[in-house]
Image (cartoon, rainbow, N blue to C red; front, side, top):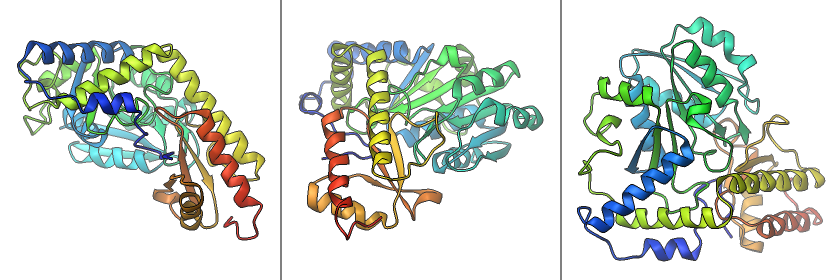
Length: 353
């Protein structure tokens, strides 16, 4: 049983769609399929433009950084491993890059970062919405809205949050925002979805990005034909994932389901005396991080004894934490089996906590 922090497991319907016979990217059938995916994604992101690229979320981040940051002064807010990776991506293109680091496990709130934004003189602000290395959600909406009032371009890594947590490009003031097909949507890995605001579209057209492929203006929904051969398999699987999403009540229900899964895991871990990482009130809807004295041994026992696979901690938390994913097509029954398995191990003298 996969309870990884990503990729999420894929259900049979999505994998059956993935195995459909490919279609010519120039055929009417495929063009209609791709157009439908783009329009649905724009609706879910609440954005003005959409680039659906063949590549992981990491490539999507790199493309946003290339388009938004090239030749500009950038401030990246970080409170974990993925914030640091975002900062490194932005620094690769920026004229000047600054990184503000909050303590691991603390949320990035507007009250904690507004002064840094005021003092930075930056033209671009970048942050992660859901910092899944620490199981923390950040105040992306309040922070981006504040930065937009200062005239900044805003860039959001939403890989660990979009489709599982409240997000709106327009309401948040997020100019560039991305997620991955393999996270809360539960589709196979390999598609990056990048939403752009009207301001971001205009910025992309004028961007000095040092690459034809990396400039998002060449990937917007009105690009026809696409500049790279699209994957029909990924498009079919994404389309099926959207059908499942709508059949189960749409985006608000999916967000509520993820919030309930996060709450269930956290409360059950705490009932076992296991310390959960992350600031109260700001826990991630997709990944819970918890402390353990021997993460490798515990993860091995969960897999060997109970067939459960979860993720090891990463970054500054790599030596003493594990990460359990509750994203995509998970069920509460699976989460209950995970916590029951931990409870069984806890009753044994050899439990590695």
